[in-house]
Image (cartoon, rainbow over all chains, first blue to last red; front, side, top):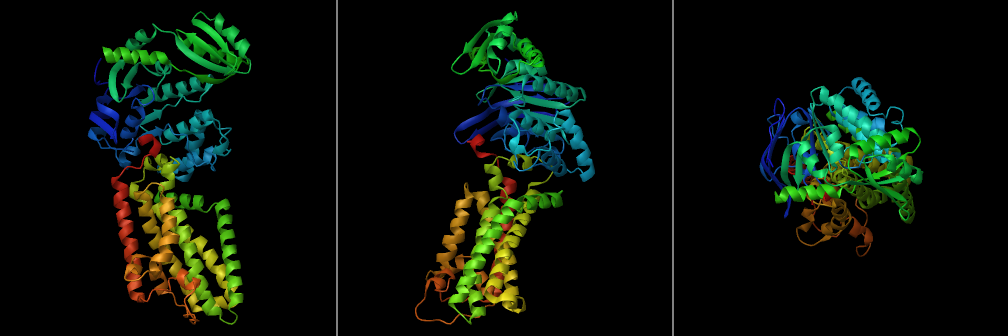
Length: 315
Length: 257
């Protein structure tokens, strides 16, 4: 498939034969692409190079060879670029003694917002990410989902032109995922460039049609997600769930036509579901949550994606 | 923004839990100083001079090692550095604001030990003693010199805290006593040279106090030279740190290895 792509109106981010080595390990291998306005998904498994690409674009690291340009400038240690860029990193580290609100205020002030403006915008952002009521507690007591929401709030606080979200749906429950995607859609409609990394194809599909598919540091494919979808639909998607009402959940799942199988693992007290339409399955989970069947853990081993990568590599 | 970064970092460094810890350190120093003075009755200024050189300057080095490592190195290890390096601040502004905050934290925490030790040995007379007040100047210049050096070490090395503590306690204790010119390769002798304490009367062979205060070396450093060297260390390592931080990557380590 294609090595690179030109998308959207203007080119906001440009990689020209960018490679990045960590000692003898390659993180990104000769990647060339251009990213414009709208939502673009970086799809790839762990170690594919998604986070390396994010770090290159956010100027945390330099390419070993090639060029990375953001708004035509080298982003490394470049505050001009950072002023237009919001990053929701994959790390789960915070100054734990701060409250969520204080942390976001701090990030806003370091982006150059005045005290009163920062407070006002922080409240707006906390409402947007659904944390306004819970942001007064110290970060150390937050669930994974709450931490993700706070990270998103700090990324969008200064109204950036580019939003980079590294695995932002990790740890979010189905309702949270849906809310998050609504927020993203709203931001994309405002003309922002949004780059979202994920290793789960169905998540990506719900956010955008435009993807960059990375595998072992290489850009395997760039373009519309439907071509990938066709490949992946040949295989059922495996999802593991944990829920207090596990049997009830299983019986509800098997009623859905898109569920191929549902099996309870009594040792792990988990339900493993195979579905051919993961997006519809997750919609169904959100509806079940409203009826009190709340899923407390979702894992998607997603071996199917590996087979797609293998197919593409062979191709 | 740089002012906010400074205030913000200082608040972190001196938040209540940490402040109480350093308060306990100061209390420990006070108790040690008090006990020390009981062994040398009637020799208040000399005893205070020894306490200042042996304990207060050690607290200065310890405090510098702990706070300056948190300027960048601790943020990298905790992976929170990403929030600093993607803000609208230049790397120079990040480094300078956070380093200055760490230096202020060092001055505050060491000053607590200095005040308590002065009162423990000299009582209220401390406030009428010129050498006591002059020690505050030593703390300030020492905080800058140690701070600049330790910040550079922390930018250069992984697990910098270990190296800084080894320098603060090992190097700074033994190198000033070594024969030859090695004493010049340490910060402590220059601070000691600036002190205005009366020399304690030598009784017999050198003891532990002489070892800890770098008193075994026969080299006498002139105060003027000490000023030049300490200011030079500060300027040189501060400049080098700014260059280093602007040119090298500080990405969370386990992700980039």
